[in-house]
Image (tube, rainbow, N blue to C red; front, side, top):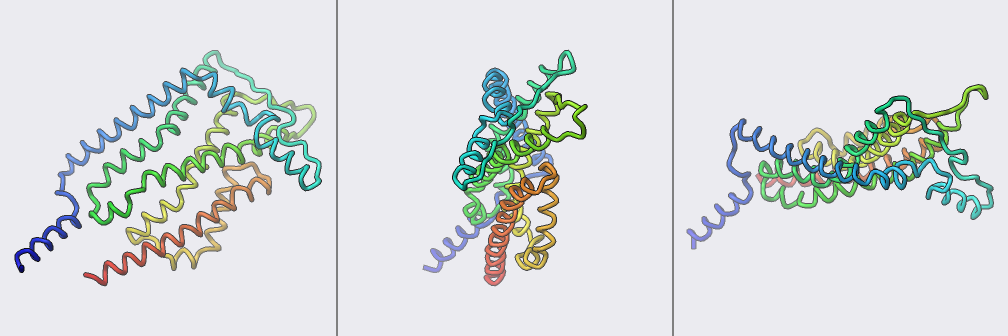
Length: 285
């Protein structure tokens, strides 16, 4: 009976221990292959985006500057619902121009790479998660089993948020801003695509805030007490971030700041749960 109990205890210890340690060079080799696989996935996604560039450009990238875009139509419907007349967004679509001989080709290639990264994001996260996973304890791997799905889901929600809300408002405000009637806005295609992609990527990355809070709390760099104590300071920082990734108008900044504040509050709850788990584990030692 005693031998059987010892066997069970040893089995439990093995499950809760990380896998056998690898040398530094072995870690570098493993990381290199995960990195190569991620790059290949991005290239594959980018190649598909380049092949179907007509759809990517006409149906996705250029769509937000149209007055018939979904966000503009919803804004008009909202105005009709509350009894306020609204002309929607981008009533005067931007005029895009190209200056360089190879400009459109290079923009197409660069855009395809960004599209490849967005499409392959879940696989890229999975590769880096596969690299980190062996270093975790069995119970940590079990609790974080949905990390890839959660990170991918938050990223795509952030991308959609940036695409459907921030981008059309930004294009409407910046495209219609004028310092004089003598100056006509003719936007370089590179400037346009840089604005759209940076806003979309920033939205996806910003929505990873709860994940960042989770890992920082896990290693003890963040605590719920710290997050609550500096809540007001954090709100100011989030407002600054919103001001950076949006045009300088109050409406756009509020639209971006609200979900960031909600994510921050979710982060406090996550940090509190992680802190309780850490305290429980320390008490069992």
